[in-house]
Image (cartoon, rainbow, N blue to C red; front, side, top):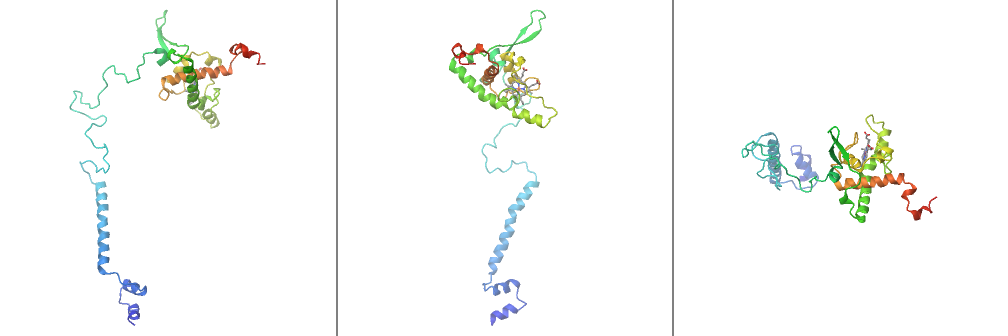
Length: 255
Ligand code: HEC
């Protein structure tokens, strides 16, 4: 009787009528108020974050993981009253050379030497022929050099010059296919002209680039550049070997 009376009584709140219809006990008043207070409180951190994003402060940011992010130091290009010129960034002491970066061997480091022309006195570039002696001291060393050169050639040079060196690498072929207006076709490394170049010229081409070809000096270490030169010579030989290159005892087996 009591239930029916409640259900039909329009004066009772919807909440109460729903609870009655579902046979649930009514939610006690304290729970509802606690819930409302919790919702209201949950807005406080959000409001603080929103305020922090728009207001200015001269304090450093709050950083939960400090690591080494906060420490007394100068930022790049910062000023400092400690030094006479007012700059915090200092130049290295004159003549400083980074460890392992002494370039005191023209052949090994540059591939060329500068010489004065006896007639005109003008400075000219003379490329070295042959590999630097320090790389070819023993036979196992030379074999390692060639193997290393092959790996590096296939990584750095083959994309343009092709694995066989004729200039048909995938990057080159794709650029031609797309008719890239500024593309200069990769040179064949088997032309008479390139075969006649000095080893130092090839080395310098890798280190500093040549004409429109970019430099690979920042990606390939000095000894590795020579390894590529050594492999390039082997690659050229593979396409232009004559009977003289075949050991006498093996000549009979060739037709
Ligand atoms: C992005 C493509 C590209 C890559 C990679 C590339 N080259 Fe070249 N290379 C060229 C182009 C293009 C030319 C011709 C440049 C010109 O004549 O303007 C060239 C020219 C050369 C020449 C000059 C030939 C001569 O007789 O003057 C040499 C030597 C050479 N490359 C060696 C290499 C070696 C070794 C590598 C790997 C370390 C390499 N190239 C990587 C595009 C490339």
